[in-house]
Amino acid sequence: MSSQPRLAARLAQIQPFHVMEVLAKAREMERAGRSVIHLEVGEPDFPTPAPIVARAEQALRAGLTRYTPAEGLPELRAAIADHYPAAIRPSPERIALVPGSSAALLVAFALLLDPGDEVLLADPGYPCNANFIHLLGGVPKRLSCGPEVNYQLRPEAIRAHWSERTRAVLVGSPANPTGSLVTAAEMTAVADQVRTLGGTLVVDELYHGLVYEGDVRTALHDGDDIFVVNGFSKYHGMTGWRLGWLVAPAGYRRAVARLCQNLFISAPTISQQAALAAFAPEVSAELVRRREAFRARRDLLVPALRQLGFKVPLLPAGAFYVYADVSDLTDDSAAFAARILEQTGVAITPGRDFGVYRQAEHLRFSYAAPLEQLEEAVRRLSA
Image (tube, rainbow, N blue to C red; front, side, top):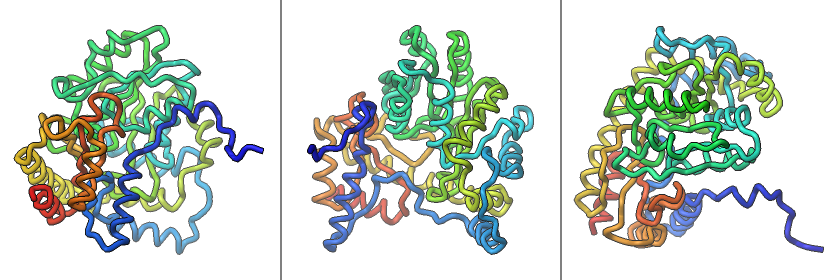
């Protein structure tokens, strides 16, 4: 009898998240008494704002722990709709609450893809996106995007790589791992191009609250036929609460509900109750202060890395990542990251997690760590 489990063929396409190996090694070093600075994981160091936690505690005491409607609490869907500009505000019925923005992307692709259908996406990019597409039998078609195009898809690239099997285009703005932003004019051009080619545009706006440079606006300005993904994890500091949302075109409403019913039953009730406080004025003011703290961290880290010999061709406009070109320092960024961790105790993510494009020549630094830790990391790297 074989000791090897039988796995579905699709699992061969699902790549591991290599940063977890870095994290495991870093934790092992910490258990051995070493000091480690974590610049590898994309998780805000700030706690969930107190009013959100208080709302959750209130809901628990009130016994509000049963399932919600599959698409989420009506009052929270209305609050999310109200946070969009009035001119393009979606109806709450177009919004579905799901267990994190990853689940929102999974729902969108489940709605759009048949086996063999292609999705165009930028490379480098967040690795799980391609894995979602593989899971549904689709084909992620990665298009190399360097700093000359701000690490983002352009209409001409979409047009050049479109095929009869292309069904959708995925854009992340701000993007992980580069922090790059699609401007309003560029998003309009991308949306027009995808529409002309007969496809569907999906836009991941998870880091929209964390924008420091450029003119950011939601892709909902560019048409009501666009899928928009967002969530409470990054800007609101609710990573472990697992709550995101999908704004879908009106015609997909029943299909979205059907998928949510079957995949999740509903998003976590306590998380939804807690998120009712996420748009309160005192929370909004606190989140703006945190955004300015992230900006200060970016403005410390980027010049310091450049001075040390890391090439950062573009100042990250959003999120909390720096995607650094290390081609002058190494031709194997994974081995380089491992050596940095062992010698300095600074944990960084190698480029192989984010696609194929020059992955051996890049590292991702997360500045979701306190300013004093970033300063210490720079001192260690300097030494």
